Length: 310
Image (cartoon, rainbow, N blue to C red; front, side, top):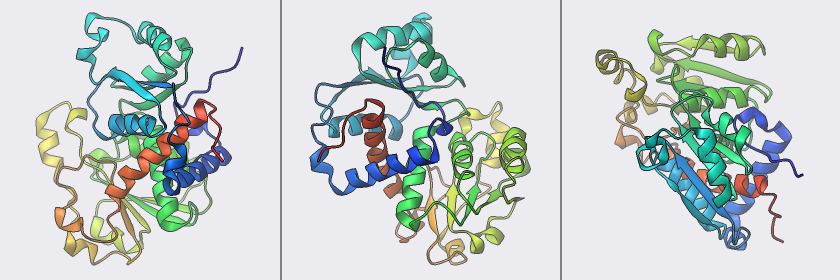
């Protein structure tokens, strides 16, 4: 019986496999029409137990671009989860209907449980504050396309570094590339979790510093990765209100940055990046969203073992 490959964590792929996948995504970007029928007859199930715009629609766009079709649900309320059905039972049923599944779930580890009971590839499309591997692949493709490399970079992460699963996933992935340095910009309450500091950064002897001031950090950065303070991860409204506007990137602050520094953001933004920054050529967050389609096309092809067209 053929083994099934899942993507639950960025580390499920080796550096070599990531490079191959990013090469495929780049080829898709520049030769989109030749991929229009490589997944004819294939079905993607999007099982989203919590709201999403970019991730869900980019998965659907990716499969449609490949000639496949899409089925699924966009919230737990519109699925049998509302009746108490387990993730294990849901994926067993979905496996009867689709060839591959993208799952987002508020509980950490839910996609891994699904993978244990699935007879089709499962892609983790975000689980709680844990991992978001396809956003990580999107970020890697964006950085490589803009800077021409994934090594020898100083990357600043700003905002919610405690609950931001995109930040956690990208740090996990980037520590495998040489001479990458991190500047972690956040208030004390939203610093990266201890396990990430101890088990990933310190354990791998990665150079990093934790600071509270964005202005001081900006001049040294090659990439600035902004994040929103996530209301849905807070237990009380008072803490959210106190912290939500602690960092706002505007035109004045951009004058402190390098001419070739690029701004990334997994979106949605609230007000942490002023709209006046959108016209700055260094603002790459909407381009980043576009790269998400190409990388998910490449991932679907890879997990379904679809051959690259000539």
